[in-house]
Amino acid sequence: MYTARNYIKAESLAQAHELNQRRGNAIIGGGCWMRMGERMYDTLIDLSGLGLDQIQDRGEEAALGAMVTLRQLETNFMLDKCFGGLFRKCTQHIVGVQFRNCATLGGSVYSRFGFSDIVTALLALSCQVELAGAGRIPLEEYVKLPRDRDVLSWVFVKKDGRPVAYETARNSETDLPVLTCALSKVGESWRAVIGARPGSPRVLEDSTWEGLEKQVLALEYGDNMRGSAKYRRHLAGVLLKRCKEQLEVSGV
Ligand SMILES: Cc1cc2nc3c(=O)[nH]c(=O)nc-3n(C[C@H](O)[C@H](O)[C@H](O)COP(=O)(O)OP(=O)(O)OC[C@H]3O[C@@H](n4cnc5c(N)ncnc54)[C@H](O)[C@@H]3O)c2cc1C
Image 1: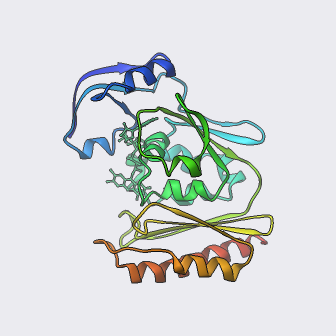
Image 2: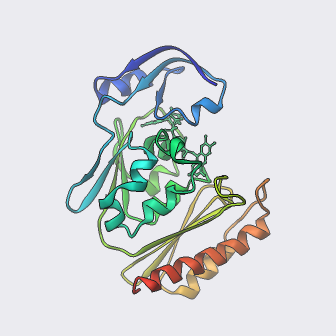
């Protein structure tokens, strides 16, 4: 469990950003991941007074605040309707409801874990993240950057109506995934995202289904306590086909 000498409820994003530049300080989201460690922080910076716990329908895009919980993502009607249940499917296996009521979108996206269900799912859509310092950048770019001291405030998801499907394999219901897979179709182009390889999610695009399958099977997979590279490669092919079947059911 972490400890902290000081706690500040930020009054503005600018203040949160400034405070976060000091080594030893950190933003706290739900604290679910941070509590797994033993770190001693100087100041924990709380964003909960900044209105970032909202999911907003802004016409052409959905705006998701950094303090939105995984449970909010799972149960939001607008997200369910606009993204074919993607947010429900990518959150429902994460630990349990009480956990999902605490863990935040900001903590999940900032952490950029290789196993992240959330990042895998978001990468199948057209997303941008807003950072207090660096401004808006595509999520695809953000996931490749090292973790720095910027503050993630919003995630914007384009409501472009693309069909999207999500599948995951776990050794037991609430364990971390052995593999994550999201599939979408933009015009005539397929877009697959494979995560928990166990490295960071990879985005693959191809104009043909055969080409996409080939790319997915050719990806680099690794071994860890949850599965071997060989098993993961096999799973990737299976989950990809299941995603395609989901899209076919919805008329693609
Ligand atoms: C036991 C366990 C099982 C899990 N299983 C899964 C799983 O199956 N699938 C999955 O996808 N995820 C899983 N996760 C990860 C989880 O979903 C969250 O990603 C994680 O808890 C982080 O969210 P949080 O709000 O608790 O972040 P915190 O613990 O509060 O913060 C995590 C990190 O993010 C930083 N941070 C938080 N918010 C911001 C912000 N707005 N801007 C900048 N930095 C920020 C913090 O400083 C810290 O470094 C699991 C986590 C745990 C602890």
